[in-house]
Length: 434
Image 1 (cartoon, one colour):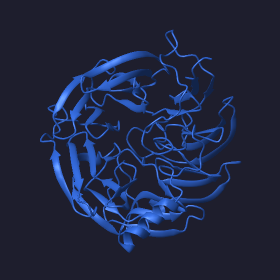
Image 2 (cartoon, one colour; image 1 turned 135 degrees about the vertical axis):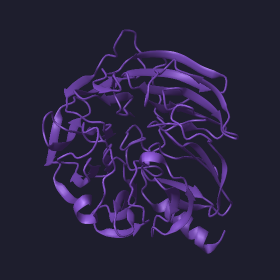
Image 3 (cartoon, helix red, strand yellow; image 1 turned 135 degrees about the horizontal axis):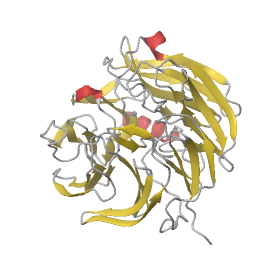
Image 4 (cartoon, helix red, strand yellow; image 1 turned 90 degrees about the vertical axis):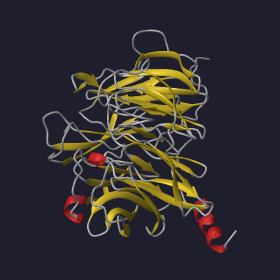
């Protein structure tokens, strides 16, 4: 191994990354996607089937305001963002995970000028004694876990001349050691900005695209070196986490900036899916510096789709197969080698534009939280969809395309599921009875 590669590997092993070396307990969900940011629930002692009855029994329920932001769970506390009804403010709430009691609230003015103005979108990130949030209008806060006091803050529009995306700021920041890497969409050369996570001091900025998109940056490793993958509306680009220097880039312009699902890596391959533009499979060479397109979708239509055209849900990619929700609610399985569709079903979903369900793997099963508020346990295989059980988790409260929906991803922690709508945040135990 070269000296440079050895240095990169040593750095990767030493950083405190929520996706690789987590300071949080194993049963926490301290950010979007869980401890490793890979949408895998690794706890054991989880029920084989959901409790009987039309609705899952709650450990607790706490009233909250509007929002799309999912909850995060860390060290016995739950964090979520909301927007009180008929207000021009956003809030960060911290609750006791055992009781649902609100421990503190941080509230600030945020006058919305975006479409779908129904509250914050970002799942909070908790690292040690600090919590990080980004509001719809670009207000970023670093708060103390103990009491919600402000350690540092940024306003992207004012400080970086950010042009807000149509649906506001969404992407969860990536924390690597003492670095916090986030989408800003500023000028000059500030699509991505790295801050000292403890002080807010800018460390570097990278990429010139001022169209932000909605996809969170993710850390991958190709050719033995860590790379931050940034999928923005013009391309998917890899940058060095220490400097922001570009490593490689593949053009992938997407309509309306709809880069939302997180790219999924297995080995030297990276898979992406977009609502209009469809799927894209990239492969890196052994050095991790030269990409090539293995296959991609041929349709740019939201209706006449091929492969997988996801709107929000991040698919499962296990190396041989891909499972995800397409543009109008079809749960599909693709052959990862060719992109060929093997099957589709609407059994766990519905039919309609932007119909959505979130997928989280747990052992050999998948938990699906669909937009109708149902939680489903199922097995997905190349042979098809096998449902084990389902029950109502929380009522859908937001009308979209003439139907009531929930577009907020639950958190799976403490052998429980934590979920929200526009009225309440709930905890439901999924612990196996002894």
